[in-house]
Image 1 (cartoon, helix red, strand yellow):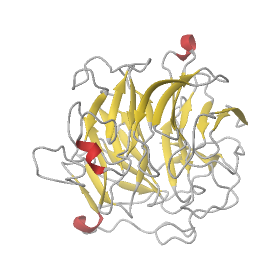
Image 2 (cartoon, helix red, strand yellow):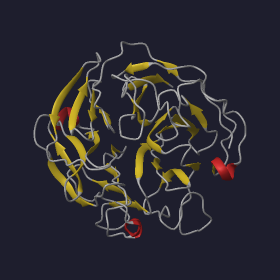
Image 3 (cartoon, helix red, strand yellow):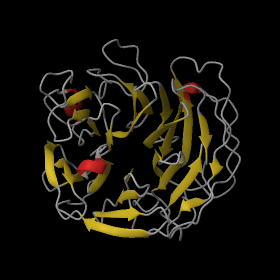
Image 4 (cartoon, one colour):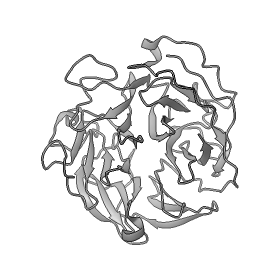
Length: 375
């Protein structure tokens, strides 16, 4: 799989109190990015289905001007969503704090989600803002309790009101991403909670992408009748995004071999645990692109200007691909350590969140932070 890195450095837009990325890890260090222009063995490093086409290649990302803003050093495994005024809500997994980052870069604590119970990869996870926030003021959160993972909605400063409970919970593989689709429905990525058979059980909420109404009911048009399940056969869904045509994409952690970028279709089965990465088995939908787990571990994803951006944790880079998974490029390789999430901002920039204080990185004095980039 051919790859190339962007050659500019990108500074923090909303920085935090951190240092350099993953200095002690083999694949992520503070030296200049490696030359990734060499073609590598696709079987060893990754691949894709289909062709990327003959479109002009995009240029490198550019740093956005603006004053860096200090973020708390306890920012860990964050989620992020924008409010209509351009400020952002950020979650902290372990502290269960919901923070607000203003357009001036100032950070304030909105509240703590005291109902959340952090353990392992669980805690306060995803956050989404209602498309009708100007009139209904709803904010949605995904969090772990002692017994399950659940989705709730709240008005800022008030207690969350659960709308979907019973999502399987474990120390690992809790999923947690929330996003509203262009249809106004709320989508959630869940994990198999370390019990593989859940992913193939249509009656189980684990290892799925769920689609529900804003009040938590199974959305009209779901493929399995009155079920919230939209797709199945997932191990641990991490990122959700849509292109300009309304097509849905998701990133997913593999186990030991392949991480995936998938185009999500209602009712499709993505193969876990029978399949990890590419397959010719007609029962399962193959990924658009796949990478070795040490090269990627893709978390949040974003789509901007008909390109998919994948924030990589273990791979300590930002991948950019065509919408069909072609022409993958490795950007920011090794510069900022573990990258947790990337999302489009209202001004057209991309906000990128680091995750070096999640217990698996090597944080510095500047971590964790938010980077603001122009695609």
